[in-house]
Picture 1: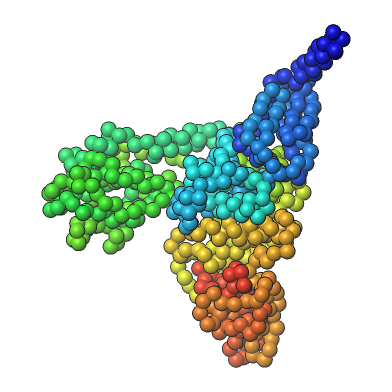
Picture 2 (picture 1 turned 60 degrees about the vertical axis):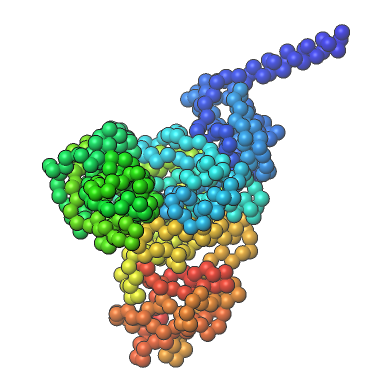
Amino acid sequence: MKHTWNVFVLLILFSCESSKFDSQVTLPKLFGDGMVVQRDESISVWGKGVPGKNVRVSLAGAVTSSTVEADSTWMLQLPKLSAGGPFILEVNQQKINDVYIGDVWVAGGQSNMEWRLKSQVIGAEKEFAEGGNPQIRFFKVPNSYSAVKLDDVVGGEWKVADSLNMPDFSAVAWFFAKRNNQEKKVPVGIIESNWGGTPVEGWTDVEILAEMEGSFTEQAKDVIENNASWDAKLKENESNRQMRDSLVSNPDSLAALKASSISFDDSNWNKISLPQANPLQHIAWVRKKFTIANKDNVTLHLPFLDQMAYVYLNGELLHHKDWGTTMPDIEIPADMLQEGNNVLSIRAINSWNNQPRIGQEGEMYLLEADKKISLEGTWSYSNRAVEPMLPKVEWYNWMPGMMYNAMIAPITKYTIRGAIWYQGESNAGRHEEYKELFSTMITNWRDAWGQGDFPFLFVQLANFMEREEVQPDSDWAFLREAQAQTLELPHTGMATIIDIGEASDIHPRNKKDVGERLWLQAKKVAYGDKNLASGPQFDSLYRQGNDLMIKFKSVGEGIKLNEGEAVKGFIAAKENGDFHQVIASIVDKETVQIVLEAGIETGEIRYAWADNPEVNLVNNLGLPAEPFRAKFE
């Protein structure tokens, strides 16, 4: 009886103790099923609740508690925990399931970081076939912007890397996370906070930018001084954006059926000549009539449609081309065609600049067996007869601090291992201020997180645009230099990809090498491994008679060529002179010899200094030599 009474008393005490932690609390959206929290670091957990009420947090055997502050906020720190899982995170009466402890990285930047695995990334099909990895999870912060700092992101959820979710993951971040998991044997969480086309100042605290001198200063001051009016502008703009996106992605099916049918009267539409004239805007509808003799074995070849398009044939949807995908050759089902007259209709949209484009010369035709039926020439066109014109949407998210407020500030309490970053294209025209801007952004993030100088790893711009062997005024080359100069900050690393870009596409599809080169930097910078992480880097130079000897570091087993017999990519000029290509050759494992013209006493040597230079100098890992410039005398 006495034993029973003791048990009863203990149950009452436990019940009373438990009741201290039954108040309702709310958590940020980052705290949800499937989340990954950072190993071997104190873990921040925070939210809102009833002032004065108690909050208790437990995870993997660790427990901590506190009281809600008068302003309804609370924040707790769990102690350092080792990698593992799955666990349950309990916050008062709430349970968050399938929680892993591992390494957490923020993946920031513009479209090359945002670029999804499913968007024709080289090797993606192999990744899909392998089925993913349940220990890798992604959280995508929705594209959003604000004139004031937000307490929480506007949406998002943790998604496990499986066959359903992987296609929408950042390709660069996926390949990075995969190597992190394979080599360190820990779960990996990626918080994607990126947005295509965006400049670095949009990701930086506006209050810091307002104190700097640059092209962004006046805008930054205006955002601060007229915050209320900016808030109203953003709300109106966001409403327009939502309306635009709805119109773009949801064509009026009845109107489309009517406008794409053979019987539709388009006599009052404008006549344009494609592909020579592309005056298209808004939701552009174009129609082209054609005749065929045989319905079998007909293929549509129209590879150039920028950006999104719905392709109709005789009133039926033939193909939908999404943003970031390529337009394949389409074998047309025979039952969609008619012997004799047919009509091809295209609904084209470009939400980036409101200027869709259709076709390229020589690349617009139907293939009927072995016979080409050209689709070039006169088309009927309208941008308002079928659907309404698109509302105007301003790029306010580009403005100083706007994305920082909505997509970075709300996540800075979340404990992380570090950040990976791929951006710079949108700042190339203002390269002279990029070093200071980019360095300021990195320092801003580190200060906001309060975790010290956490590892910050970034990608140098790839080669892009038409090749010019001598291009000393290249904006992209100067931007790459500014990126390299940012390495002066502690615990930073740069992945050079001057060898894997594409001349005609600002979004090179080789994202695997990018992610894995970032991982090499992570091993060295974040984990202290003694690995070779960079390609050959300029170290020093000296004169030897009429020749110039260039010394490199980060050579590993030695510099070499990945193709050809002569070193490509060097240009030189005597002081205040014009640059020209020079002959270069490897003389030992760390030295390149440059043959200078007779009479050049002082001047400058540059390597890989162009938008799209031809280069072939690598180390034993195949990592390319970094672009540089140096004076000589």
